[in-house]
Amino acid sequence: MPGLPPMPPMPAMPLPPGMNMMQAMNMMGGPPPIHMGIEPPGMMQHDDRATQ
Image (cartoon, rainbow, N blue to C red; front, side):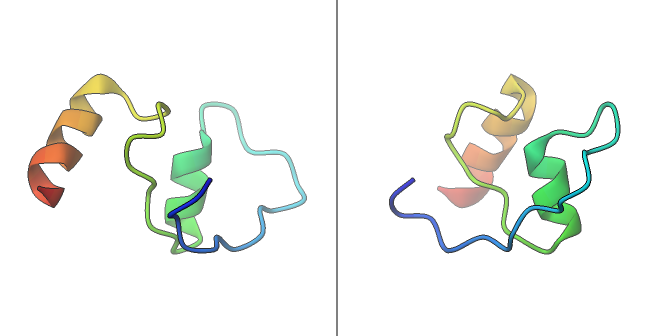
């Protein structure tokens, strides 16, 4: 994924049910990736307005 800062290593344990990759990265302090196709449409629209 070019253009993104290096992310901390993902936890070795499986993620709890209902937790996606972005939520895990937010817990570890990593910035949520934008325009990667994993955000819900509503959240993606909010991030677009906030970053542009």
